[in-house]
Length: 584
Image (cartoon, rainbow, N blue to C red; front, top):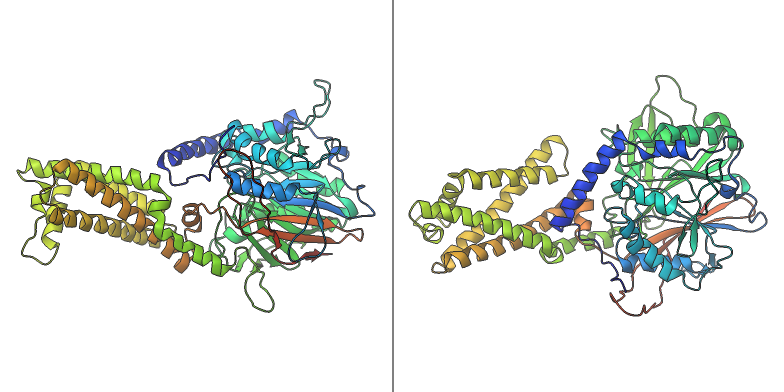
């Protein structure tokens, strides 16, 4: 039996290096050889009418039509498997509502289906395996529910190759090839032929799934496809659910909204073509691994990225208001006019607390785990310890060249505490080019890390680097005073260990303060924690009257399964995060 994968260690230096290489390669590939354009050529779509496989409009006309949305899965086994178990249940009993919530006829995955990078093995071990385990005995193989997926940036890290093999295997018959069915993923079967799709739902509802690649870029064939769907296939006044790869409304810098908001704004304009009177009702996404909901007018912008990846915080979220040269969806543009885009974080009308999961208080409390960053990310700590030991060896060699030892040189002097020792240490370090080069490299790294705008990035980066150097320097001086007779080799090891632990702890404090005080480094701070709990997904219901209800379902705690052996399948306790959200 294969080991069940643990949560990805994002501060494991070899893994970070491998991810960086894959990101660089995929970025270049995406710019010079976009696979989506090749797919549009090799898998043409009939322009006259929507494909029957993608038309659900005649299903459940006189009853409820259910569909599910989840995003950001395929990280650790425990979290992915727990969400898969909930999705696989034929009907789900959820605390907060008395009505049973039926399993969706369709499951839509909203991006980042595997972590840390896409590969056939990664998909097999981190998503296919847990979904298959969760599906045993839950589905009718003669009438399986359908599965659609939009790729996220992690799915693009192999140029979309593994994603296409898993989710886009189905092929229509042509003069050149026979029809081919989709692939099974647990109890679901894939239906799409490209990385984007349009689904016709009952009662005038449509669902679009858009592929925004790595940087939000939408290729021209995809633009042509959705434009054609909006003009030719959708009846005037159709209502639309849009699934996209990231919450641009939450990420946008209100002082400089371009280019971050540009691609999403253009996608919105396609969805809400004013001349056809289509109505964009809801935008669903992941990428942020939590639940939140923003409102602009009567449009709901929902992030539900709790499908199995590590938890992201919520207490950095805030309302976003900025000027934009193009109108909101469904509004005819006026030449030369600018429009205010106002995205309001939904709050409880009684408590005025944001309806997010986890709540702000819990999110802020969880951030304090960064104080034990060194223990939670021991691979990073060990790597930094080795680097500090190497640096101490270089400085010690410089002292030996000058006829003394580092320990003797850092002995107590008549000056104020540490002043003489600091001066001596710095003179040893800066007299040789190699230690100096390491110092400059570390300063550049802290500058690059700083998630602050322009001038403040330099200030924060230098301040962080200075504190890191001061902490390690003081620790080395203390060791020299406390252990003056220790053999040089052991002293170098001790200095490296002390430096690694203190440097990693200092980084954790930096991340904690940046997030809790300034709302920065929310990704870096929580990826360090690898929290498996606080999962979420959406269950949607279109009633016979055409009304849409969205049920945001949360799971506070994920059971811990052993790496090997029989699955225990302890009971799960899902609850309704808010709502249900009703859209007419």
